[in-house]
Length: 305
Image 1 (cartoon, rainbow, N blue to C red):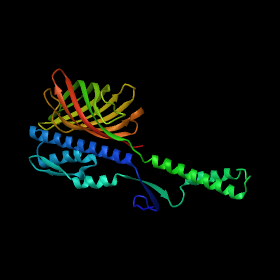
Image 2: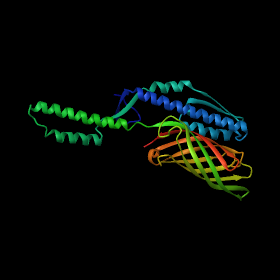
Image 3: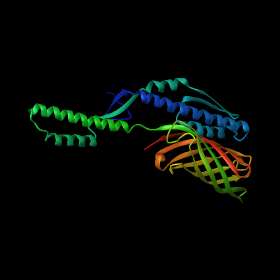
Image 4: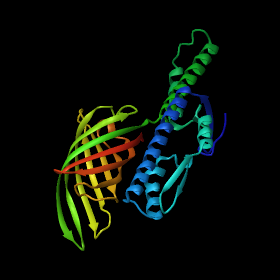
């Protein structure tokens, strides 16, 4: 048994778990890839002139790259002219060495639910036939008690598991916007309606090649010649009728044909298989002629009950 600061007053039981090691390695790889793609998108925005200045670049790095929970795996250098980075292999290696073990808290005193289980075992044990004497009665009681505690620990261990993964999606819309002049700039609002297709995925609930419908309510404002400030609430409905909720924010580019920009979706759960799903999706959007819009997002997600 070992102790840990995350579980004060408790002892921990550690065990080798090869499946946990594989899952953590897969998740870490997908997060690294998503962070690097976010950094590449930032570099592209700087080169195109849509993103300028060290402070603006630094904010974008913090919003799109560092939110991957692997920011300490990268050495990121932001300047007035761009951003560069390199992978810190040492930190990744340290995590890989810790991937093999799973820790389960084992309370010094039985938790209330364990105590209830033990009480029930003792109550039932009183009625076990004692045909072979009191010693046999004690053995049966100890065995039943061990079984109750084991089942409780297994259920506690299972509750620590979390699903996570990554996917890429392609959204194609037709836009129906209205724009008004307002306070030296303009405000835009309206609907995007179209399809959402999962083009790559590490696994369910996001299924590769699965298509659904997407509708977004868009609110945007532009002041003089500054970049657009845009927010959109989107609902994706998949083939099973389950809904995924996305909140898009963008402070880059514009909403004119031939334009576009980069931003990020925040996954805010949904219904059915998406109830406990959260995550982040940096995206690049292009506004095309004939009121068409295309968006590609690269997402990482996790399930948080």
